[in-house]
Length: 243
Image (cartoon, rainbow, N blue to C red; front, side):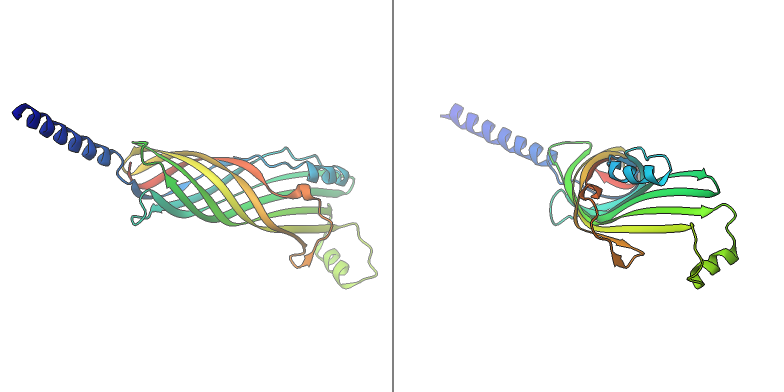
């Protein structure tokens, strides 16, 4: 009987110790940080290239280098959840002189939003987080053709005298959209106050509308001009990390 009691006590103690070790291992991650995020968006610019080729400048390469920043903090009321903000932007341009005119085409993209993420509790010494960005973004396309000897008086004669014919043109079109972006990020602390990040996601755009001159709706825009695309980001963060 004494041996049985000893076995039961030993089993109970070992079970409690294991439970405590397990709870320590899965303790909720916490911390806060801000960082710089260089990245790359794999955006397809073929639809634009068909037009700028006709315009007379060289085509854009697909994909754009981006820069941005982000920050986050863990919600202590919800274990392993963190919220924050992120944003990035990038652009491409192409220009050429043809006869007496300088021609230039520019493409820009930007995205901003609120981040909601869950960090896997069973991965120690780093943060592996799945989540989403809910936000908004913009695409802008510009075409400019200007005489190389363009002057102040030429400018005002064009806008004030309707009888003046000109080959100088400038067009800007904008696409404002909402975004839902699934993401995954891996944060590896260097120490308690600095960390490196590698992550990415897929930009899903909603409610796409194109406008010209920031006010008039542009109709018949090809569906291929949506900004839906994968992106990757690196990052250097400073703050406080407890993984």
